[in-house]
Length: 407
Image (cartoon, rainbow, N blue to C red; front, side, top):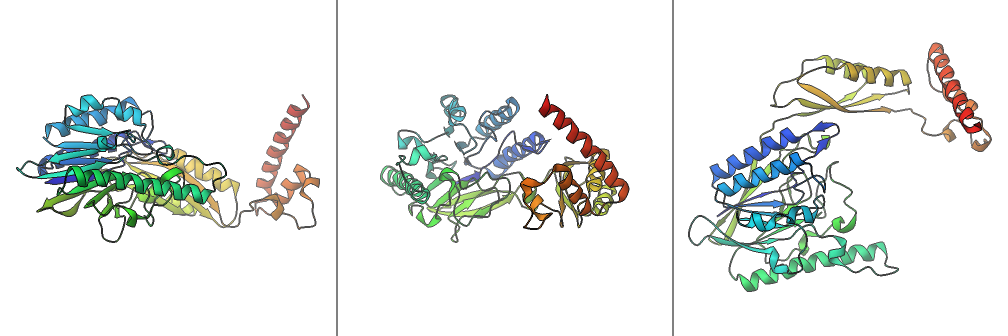
């Protein structure tokens, strides 16, 4: 039996102002074709199907079209909710989807047996059981205790996660003795390598969970939440498939994958299949001159979709004119094969606060705005003409604010 593991589709996701719907459509079309070519028996989608709790109509369209195509492949599809998903949205059509051999567990059900799904392969006798555990929210795991410390809350949450996994492992063992078992989960395992695109993983039950606490009855654990494909512990029993697309520039060098588990006489072999890249992400970092040179070069055409670019200007001295020049450069950039979607500026010697302009004997509350501005100009390293223009602009803004306060 072949069981495919994927997660974190984040349908409807935008990378800054760039829409990734086309990227996601390319992935789901590839997935359907690959399931057919590999004769996959079961597809596991381990959470974060959508990027938003209330997904767009276009994101829903891709989701349902993909599920219909998978059902035509004569395979079972099992979907669990992630922290980005609204359980009610995923669960709404679950009865209809079940008729297509698609099982959905959007949130923790009252009856834990609803998470236990036996599956069969194309060959007679090929059987396994899936424990489809969704993202477990704080309310699922513990009762609030007045005066409870942050550490106590974290330990209670982790104990709650262990309890849920142990409970479904016991049901698998008692109701389906001898069958290979895979648990799905959506959580943060301690030691996992995270990227910029994961939300704050110290919120709720996303505090690090020790993977050695996963119940030993499970032959494999198909995890979601972390976007970089990786094992969750040294043995490789628990693995993150990762997101199928890079969802931040920090993931631009990742090799995105799906994982296929294949049963063989009651044991599991695992291998990954790399997802084709349809769009490059590129980061340009350096001086304004360097950025100008790179942007003026012809862009490589090695993707089906235009390259998305992040720009970070790094200069020694703070210079407002360079910020203006950078913004003009980006506004004027016009290339059908590339798009700048994010830019930021870093001055190494930038003064971050008023207290750095004066010695410790000077009380900041006694300073006038014009005095602080003059001190800032002195330290700016700007030319005289630039200082005059900034002085005029500052005076105009300050007068407008004073008039507004007095009116």
